[in-house]
Length: 220
Length: 238
Image 1 (cartoon, rainbow over the protein chains, first blue to last red):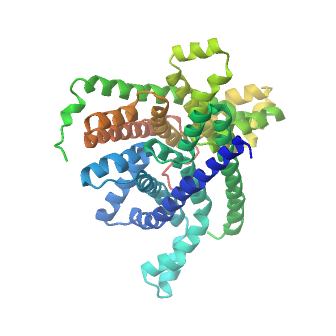
Image 2: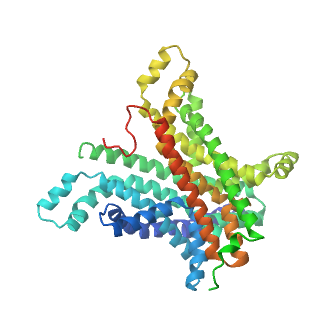
Image 3: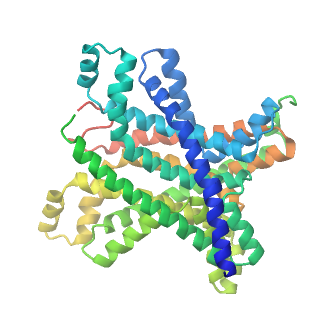
């Protein structure tokens, strides 16, 4: 096997082990939290509404890189418990995506008509049950395309973890290109890998979106 | 943990560097935003041009810059692009401050691709009728876009552009990876040199928050100035 093929395999390995895992675990943590926060964003209790709103506003207005600094340098400095770069990147990415997912989930919840909730309450469900069994399942189906689009962005953003020292696919490209003095091929290959994955996924999301729209059209 | 020393951020030798870094962030983001708007409007309008090649080129541009991570784009333009240029030109670029220039170039193209998507979706709200009416008065396609469609689209997409404008400031933080001394770069340097991480990251975060919130406030005003009578305003109840 040629040296270049070997390099590509190393890149793909780092992509799966670091970027895909990092993104998937961050989303797995962020989504349930975001569902809770979205309900908090619609709450009438100021003690719930204001902290959640402040969280979303602050996290959405700061760069992911800055949040990674907090998770990797500043947080451990305060608590005195050192964190590995991977864990810090995971915490930062999850915390960042919670803010974005919260707004998407909230938009999804608000797109479900009040009639659905009234009907659920009328048949005797408690408000929490109405949310869990009636509103959330419908809303999740409707917001799936936008959640997936945001996940594709999170996947691209996972490369930022290389700045705090995670040996992800971008860090790996830097190392290999420095060692073999072949930056043109390696960075182009990296861009091509991301393009194929993200473009393919975004086409799938678009197809899904068309299906969801067709199915929920007129359902209110 | 060592005691906090907030004045460290304002004392020599850091005070001046902090100011420089914040100004660099502003300069980088605002310059990139101006170019991104121009690139985005042209690319967005070209996606429905009467010329197939122009449509294809605009679509390819948007899809490539949206589907490759910004960090990879930065390295391709800063690091790889000069390698395919002849040596004298390369030396000129690096003597001229290529870090900053390539960061502006990348951010403009990246943000321009996103603006182009907003412009394209704005075209749908303007409607075919308006475009046909403009063409029927004898304007050419370019004239129609310039005098009728472009201004109208720009006014309808202001709410969407707000988030892209905020994102430019956030994205500009990645310029530190190619050696532009902006706010994030300084934050990390301050932290690593003095170990006053709490002060350094608070400062860095505050700078971005103030930028984001000022932009949101400013764009709120722009939205009020440019809103098209007859269309729904954001936040208005249908």
